[in-house]
Length: 400
Image 1 (cartoon, rainbow, N blue to C red):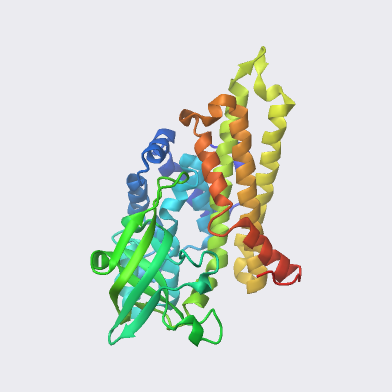
Image 2 (cartoon, helix red, strand yellow):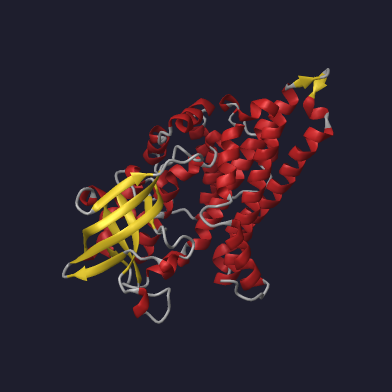
């Protein structure tokens, strides 16, 4: 049962409705469900299907295309609740792409593609769970990507590699970022990159091979390396204007970063709840261990940090549309930085509170700790968030 301290920000009527609905749905998927998904590295198909059946994968799809027509202010509530329910970081990550990969389609795709695809996304029949950006030789420097999509008549021919692409086997489509103009032929490194929709069923065995990457955190949400060898994609699957794909990604970056911050927040909250419960129940030397300040203070510090992050996240979500891009970027990066740090400290405090049982699977906090460490790396490292703030807000020299 959620603790009262979790309901520490004022919500709109619609946000409250989202919170109640998601809490009710998540109550059907308890700790053992998520524990088993992590232990066996199994995608939470039943959970995702339940969300899809209720229309939640189309929450950002406009009503005219059969979606719910909500915004980031509701998405942060949804993702926080999924994580805090016991899903941890893997819970919201299992559907993150399915929700946010529809946004570029809404904003930039031609009307024919929208009318074909978006209603199917909204009712759960089609899933755009995978986003192909990161490459082995590019990493955080996305403009250094080498994957090339060359125009050949009515098709693009794709060659290259991608890495750390999530949910590929659980997706019908991939939003692929590729160079349609080589980097050496553009005036700015951010130009010449395009966004192309790939039908994965058509691609497998016809120029696309994938390989799962074994990993220790968020094991229920699989990540892959992708290999493209003369994959042919219809030119009509271009999203937006050729060469402007990087700017299309930037256009939704702040909203998505706020949602990631909410996922970190929910992870920290469930870790803290577990720490509090154990501190109250476990008795040593004649009393509960939570009476000892060495146990109590780290939990209280974690609460303070989570509360601060929560207020930043929800405050930014409420006014993001009214901010210019640099201001919005500053708030989104502050939110992600604070939430990831708070999640890690909460998970660490929960493990320490549990003592030796902190690394036992049955208590879950070891899973939260592994996932909390991951949040400091994805989708952007804490250092890059600080770089943005140092350069764009504080006016310090560019460091890279």
